[in-house]
Image (tube, rainbow, N blue to C red; front, side, top):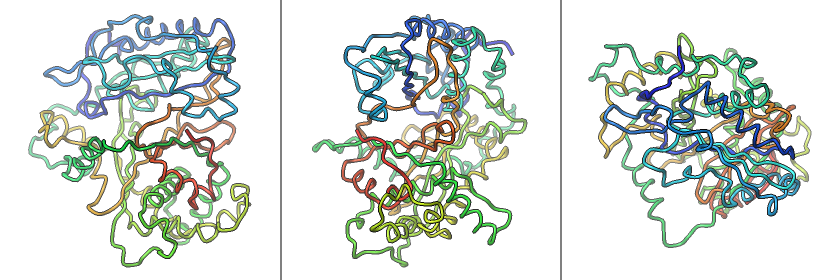
Length: 491
């Protein structure tokens, strides 16, 4: 497949992506005077391989279109010197706290709302600091997902390091979106809406408009990063899988399922009105349901599979539904174990596995695993076919990926995982080096957990989230975080 040098249409699935940028802040301990030049030269190589990084996103009658290349590297990549005001060693000592990246100019221009009518596909900015370099990279979400974003970084780093992408075996097929368009005649207009799609419910509309109307009293939001040591997650996974094997020999859960279960419980508990009332316990008569929503990328689920480094947006949203009281039980049962203990995060592995009701954790984690296993070739193709046949949707009731994210009267959170990004393993060459940390700037709004890229050398996982100060305090002091995680930083 030839590299697209002219405009092309995005798939109907990609048209449902958020109208926003995927952004990350990468921190490098380089002091090489050639670092910016190396990044610029490498970006030119990326643009040769993937020409549409120099394009714009345009809405027209056929949907969302990527224009032909219309920018130069100088248009999409800029740099400035903040060495007089930001010290890299200080950033590192503070665990690269998100509040440090609110400094004017670290984020590339035009990548925060309100966006231009035809936003650039790709923008990046390097900030020179005393003793290091901060690189913020923003890619428009309609064009890619976090896996595609990671592949773009991989190509860029290869060009910075080697002057080519031969070492990573780049292939133009990574850009081929044809598999995201259903075959001719396979999109029946009268087919029912697949389970992995829904139209916005009145409750969802109220939640959205309610957030924007909150006005009046400004809320104090705090952004925190927690660290979950790998050995803690592994210990819990081993204990849960041992229990599952005794009940359902062919079933299993992953470390990611365990972490998502812990985050689900911790965030629900922190936002529960009765949290501070120690006289209240989890009630058997509580019939509410709790929903965990999360994306699942489907590159390997299709038959034939998409390239592992496919650059487009190839994910769907799914969710797990569990009784609200069961999700809370993970926290409630941890709470009684943790009380009075010192240095919980240093506790032995056996103690950790006994710090939670394994049967409850297994139930919640299995619900997550089963929802992931529903994402197969038939399910994805059903979504693609339906969207192709229903491109002109009612703006009052737009189609959304996934099932409704809250049951009436129930609870719901989302967890997004970037754990599989290989950014820490990228070598950007002698001038730029390797990344020390991946961060997001402090958020002035509610943001449910995002699992950051897996740390190198078995270093575990970091999770960033943003909540109103009172909720954040309960989260920090809650049993799940006290027992299984450590607070890295709070902004």
